[in-house]
Length: 157
Image 1: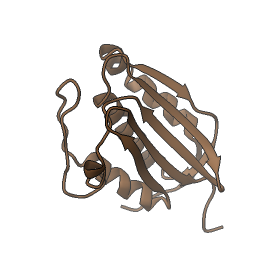
Image 2: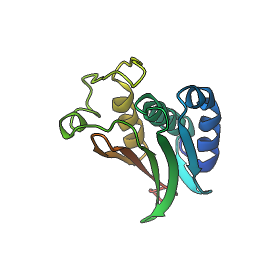
Image 3: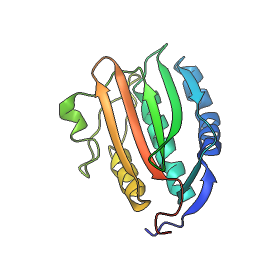
Image 4: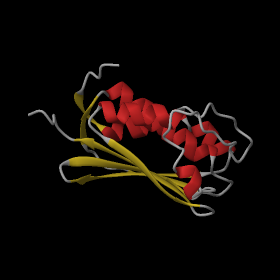
């Protein structure tokens, strides 16, 4: 995979993906808050779209009725820090260690949704191809925060 980086507004991606998941959010009666701001990111746009869509789908998958998903971003050290946070079921420390591995780790969602277990492994690869980092902070019963940090401008300049 060879990224084709360009500068784009990350908020546009959030708004596009929010519209895409609107039916699922309403079906599960989840609150989706968009606290994003306009911010440039320098990365392969289609790769970032895949990452955001996957993180959003996972947040929905592991949220219960009435849970809240918040999408936000801010500038940090010349990068754009993206956060997709949910008040869902959370992830144990043991399972957090397996999340980004290539082994296909999977658990069922709150409505018994199935997955391949490959999504986060692919997200990690796509983020790293674009000079970024991805990580999770989570506590069982209190939800999860997935962070993606990507450059705002060409790191080679």
